[in-house]
Length: 150
Image 1 (cartoon, one colour):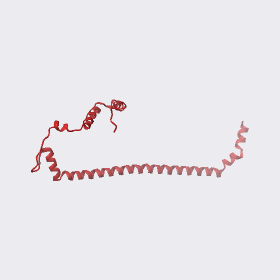
Image 2 (tube, helix red, strand yellow):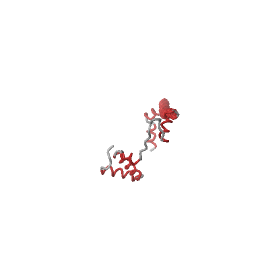
Image 3 (tube, rainbow, N blue to C red):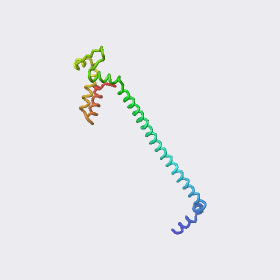
């Protein structure tokens, strides 16, 4: 057995692999792999940070637009035109020469189309069902043909 080990150790191919010059090449190869791995990891981290920056910039832009919209809305709410509309709606006021008619709800609802009423009924029915029951009800309505295609 020891003879077998000695023959393997003294084999010229093994001596060539364990030569000092080759060991230096192995070390250099490992160093190149480590630097490459570090570079790839840095690039990946930078990509993730760029995505986060992009998302935050988009959120910032959306928030800026919402702020501008609110400023415009506040400017509109301060105008005389809005005050006139609000007074008409809330207090039943009218401009000089105008006549205000108050229509009872029952009469006004006569002229609402059936389609809108059915939408109100379906929304009331959907409010009855919660969670998994709602899902089953929607599937049953779809499969039985009771649900309108949208």
